[in-house]
Length: 369
Image (cartoon, rainbow, N blue to C red; front, side, top):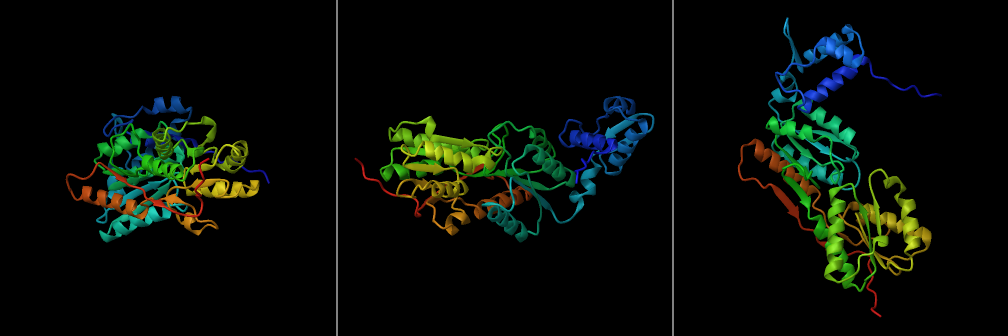
């Protein structure tokens, strides 16, 4: 059966565009939007279509029309949604919800919010900036009182910065977890990712390894910093950095990681004795690839994951890994937003959690020749 592509009605396209311009701050409150004639020309639609869009936006509180003058941006939408309730609502945007360490982080946030009778409005982006845009627009439209965000592709330029500036202009407190956008001045709660990879690499060096590779996810800030920690530890030990012993991937190429891993491991079979993995999820991908290739862990290859996730503890082989605060991070971020809304001063602008090595079954000491 042939799939039918859903096409938005023309008036809905106008609504979405104008709403995006208002929420991102491109159109300011009180500013006059383009005339009906200008919108007709811009979207190649009839006057009736334009008027239908304006009427709906006016009903939602985004616009107000003045007879004989024009149509202006309104902020009534804020008081018609979450902003007028006695119970405050905190928005939470994460890259994922049900995978990996995210349920623990969300549990920490929810637990702290419940203590002060705050509601939680949850959205995820799948690490996609278009989905992040939709999530931010939803939070702004709803009128959340505060926001906790895990950035999307935090090591790349983010086209949604204007939305974050809109929250600032509206005095809506927000903080970031796991990473942050370097171009924004924003409080954050993060693992010390440089230290995490540094400790992982140093542990392998202490066990006699000198041929140490790394697998890093490079569209997220965590990957950039974990690479930095790896390079720092190699430098201190006066070990050479080998570009061919680095396998990088990003969100788009992640589905191909298992295939690329097999090629990488086969190519470096005689060179590598150990690997620092971006996280536990990648660590277990390495385990599966090694089993397919007949590479024994840890006899032929030692590996260290990161984040001390439930999968590191419950897999067939217990990964050596580094701790991640998970639930505590979520709780602390929620506590920060609550205290900010209560008018507390001198709150931390950045918090780094220190990782600790958790010994498993995937690292072996090798004898120096």
